[in-house]
Image (tube, rainbow, N blue to C red; front, side):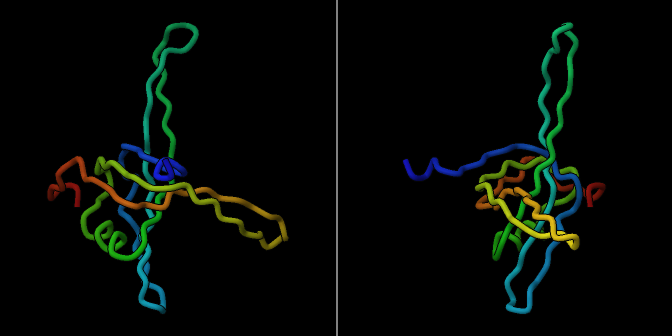
Length: 116
């Protein structure tokens, strides 16, 4: 049952090519945005489209793979967990941001020359 705690699975499309960073320690991190869409009928019976944007972060070998394999527009399935970060603005206000820390991903579309 513990494997069901804090688990996120999504299928969506990349909004941009992932950004890969290497820290002084040599550890790699990749960050990208993923759009998920849902369609529904409103109270008037008209179809509506709702797009949610998710920030995805990957570390280590997974970050390297993300940087090598993923392109803007790729459809992927992701598996990860929610992570909330706290930071303070220059004005001293406390802010929070939630992202998904990637455990694994599956590329659902083929990369072609026009995607690169």
